[in-house]
Image (cartoon, rainbow over all chains, first blue to last red; front, side, top):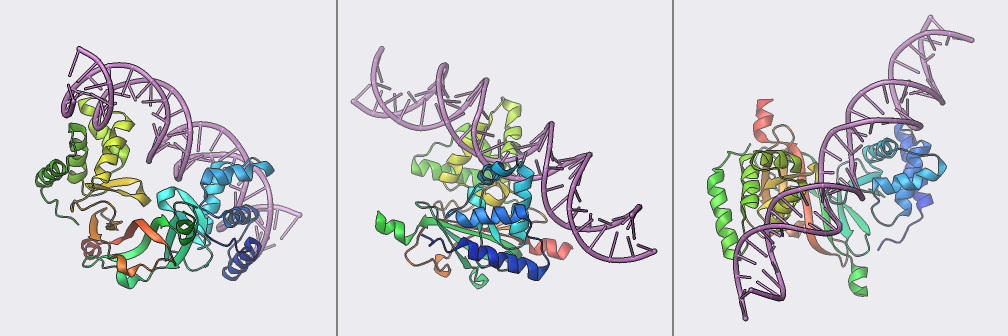
Length: 144
Length: 144
DNA sequence: ACCCGTTATGTTATACTATTGCGATACTCT
DNA sequence: AGAGTATCGCAATAGTATAACATAACGGGT
């Protein structure tokens, strides 16, 4: 689904974004983001943990803290219905992503929310939205 | 937020819906639905479990199976971002709900998805959507 | 150089959420 | 009655996430 667009390039962009905003993209955080970028599907926290192990025994809090940082920085999203995480290629401010997740190949496409179309109940003020669509992407539908 | 609209009435409606469709609303399932209806906020599986205990020691699978049944029947929804469950007052077919969850009082309002406004990527066929909005409801905003 | 506040990490243990697998029971259909 | 299906009870375990506390690393003020 996604064309594995150069994760090195994305990583550099993330670095720049963090520098701009005075955020510290430390080695652990950077490594986690790298893993997310290399994957072409959402990754589970414990899979990240396992991938981190080889160079020093990481514990769960390590990876969850890195994920908290990345999601807060808008560099990653949590996929709520999968308990998984995916890199965000738009580096937008947190909150506005809408995800299309292919259940065949696992690929994720991201668009931005056009809030206009959601009719909130009278007086309700939306702070944050979780929008995830599950289905089958074009490629997988062609492939059968 | 929600006016605790007679859960007994809703329960009766659920019974009718199940009868119509040849689904068995067994005692366990009925009791779980009742608990969901009585709550005015999403309920966690283990809280349901605890509430079920008094009349016979229920185990996790019991409650998860009941929840699976109810969600499949469209009588309840899973709130993905909270790992919690809420009764569905519309008894519509599964899949089309859009939730507004107040982070102050926990209340949930439900609307239906107007699919038209979601711009899927080229060729992507959406099978199921998770749409949850978090914020503050009108009542809580007034109350401070 | 020293102290101190802040931020990030390491470490251990534990809490919370969910599923698997198997056996017992009950109901329906023939 | 016997076969088949659906539900439930039960025990064990898998998977996800956080709490709580200790340590390290950096930067600024004195």
